[in-house]
Length: 470
Image (cartoon, rainbow, N blue to C red; front, side):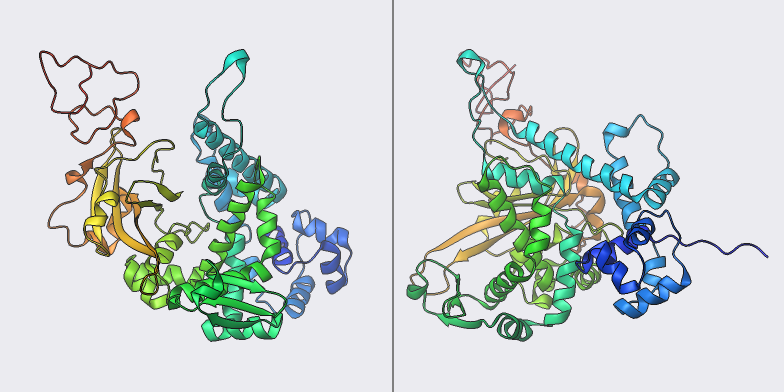
């Protein structure tokens, strides 16, 4: 008779413990074992016994198959994603080796993933640094740019935080809708929700008044904005520990970058409560990424839905990788997220031939466009205008345009490509990242010559483009 197969559940056990906010000593006390035994189980240095599995199931009310199925699948997926980095291209690393490392040495796997995240953040910081050397070798621009720091923090993690998704999904299950949200704030935190006129809010849309135990909301907020603000307040009250833990892994020179990143993580978590990962990803595939239909299904705004679509990269449950950008009519970028490898202009304006700038011509109408960069990469872009502020006659409002896009190979999964009248990626609009980096010659929209090219005189020949260059 063959020997019984040993079962190792280290990563799953660690995740279970951390999700419940337990120390190894806490779990050891619950299971009536020693803390050192829990440590050995989590490091996969001991197989889990049937007795311990039963105690886990009874103590934490869970299905034991959730521990055994997939085991280190999430750790494996993360490690495999890291090993796809071009820096490892000349090393022969098989998927089996990644499985062995993640399954048998989960601590080493986590360390490598964390180190690679720090490496990515450092690379982004170098790419984003645009400083000039001054007299005596001093550098200008050494003060921290909080917006750039926050963008680097999010980009290094591909704007995906499975820890927040899991915690938010659990919270969404407990809250169960907008009415449950208000009850949760009242029963758990003794906070009443009160809608008051804008003049009372004094340029705020939400304010927490601890003295009166009230959350005040601008009474002109629409339903989607009101629900988001209440959810955001609940996230600040109940998910502080998870957010602070993620911020500890970032590198911030000043407080501004950390505060912006904290706000971004809180917004991420609030969206994850309103659009729980499992339910949202299922709806996304069913509706083929129809943003307006998804917004109606989950009771959120067009922009909130588009933003949420950029976060669906949880290992093992990945959606289409998207990039996201939000601009105003002057071309200023107020939000930018990249999960699709799109080379955003880090300094200067973007390309005016991109449809995100044309969306203002057809307010609230969706415009689509195939794009081709100078290096041949092709993307599919969806753009539409959105409105901030307003809510009543005489209230100031700001119109912005947002664009959501993905690489051409994923575009077939989107509802927006089904009626293209035979037009596809081959009909892509040639665009550049920014004029200073674009080498296309005959472009009437060019505002600057490309770096490193010599301007030609026009006393004999005038080029059709604003700048002629050799």
